Length: 151
Image (cartoon, rainbow, N blue to C red; front, side):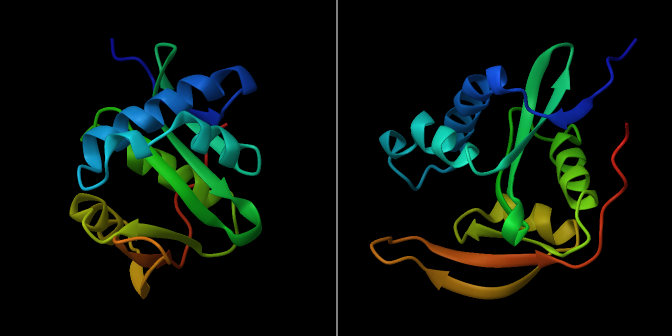
């Protein structure tokens, strides 16, 4: 019997585990950035102003999505094991909670994420580079909503 994936708002006591997942995935994926630049504190600080959602299976957090709701901006979408539909489930859930387009920034070297978001209906609306950074980014927007969240 396969366990059911549950998508729900993160509980305050789960935020440290979310921060650990965030750092672990960044260090494995964002190889163009020095590993010491990925810090738990960055996630925990941002989470104070964001809605954080988790994908949980058998009591284990498999992924997270953090949305800054005033701008409907997906600040984080990180998944422990890719290819299982966890990222899509999180993305659809947070999209369905808003009646406005969802936007995000993806770093230009992150081709895997760009392909994922393109498959999910996002289009590039802007390109840029933050002051003091040597990494370019793309702003992506998805007009339309995902599947409604399950209760």
